[in-house]
Image (tube, rainbow, N blue to C red; front, side, top):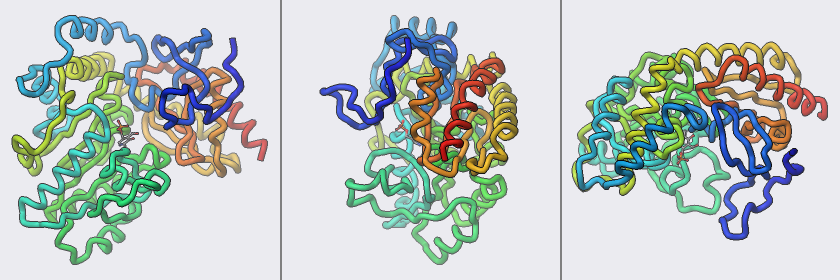
Length: 403
Ligand SMILES: Cc1ncc(COP(=O)(O)O)c(C=O)c1O
């Protein structure tokens, strides 16, 4: 049965707060890269719950591991040692080349901790008014501090006064960064997404990443990277900044880390690992045994099934096909991204494509008004990529023909 006609912004329920303009379907179950709605209609999932369902749905090794953990213990709280925290932290340290981890539950929480770490780094060296460099079009979350760091007025509107202490600069412009911070002794950190997700799949260039790393080292600033969306294998490396061969001082993770179970993490290197001391930061849910098991099993399965290689290889294939099919079309501005994090920027807003794709049996998102965003589970197969293209391309061509 087909989904009802598209009706964006219809409140889903009289009792749930109206914070999302939802696609008028409800998903009831999934298998691999396929999900079904409550009417039994099937969809190919090219969104993965916004870069969360790394292993797709109902994964045959993840689900029994989580069931086993639930039957043992779900939550204990951080008054006690949680062995899974040490195991997952050790793994993240090994994969990142950094040294210590703080666990939380979401992306904004990880970023909030990054901002606190950066400020305390400053205070510890006598800077009473620490300032953090952030970027145009950035997205770091919707708490008051993270929306203040976010570079999108729509997200900030109505929530002022914003948190002070941010200096905003354009992407990929090292001279602009130097100029904005010139002679300012209060700068403590630079904070960005390696590939901006919500801002429209905007990558930081490799030379820029290297130059910022060097500047941070020279000036004793912390290099803080938000890998919430671009991390956990999505681009074909564990963390997208690894394409530039750099190591940050602080890194935020969430989304794909728990393959659907809420897990966030702040990973710190030697310059930042000992800034927080008991009493400086905490969270009730962060690092609970279920969350840790989800993270440990997600990484184990990713390694066993070589999902990084798959993301890189199938991402290249998808990018090539998209560029070949749409790249020269006048209504298409640019097709960009890395691995399985791809944006197709059109010349005009294209939010209607979300509902049209759902009607056609495909889940996608549109971000920054005019960028079609593809973030499929990392278990996607080449045949499923072909299916994705077969569903998406006619919709985009039809949309472009309507101009
Ligand atoms: C780069 C980035 N940082 C932070 C967040 C916020 O994460 P959460 O929604 O888990 O708070 C997001 C969410 O889209 C994100 O893409």
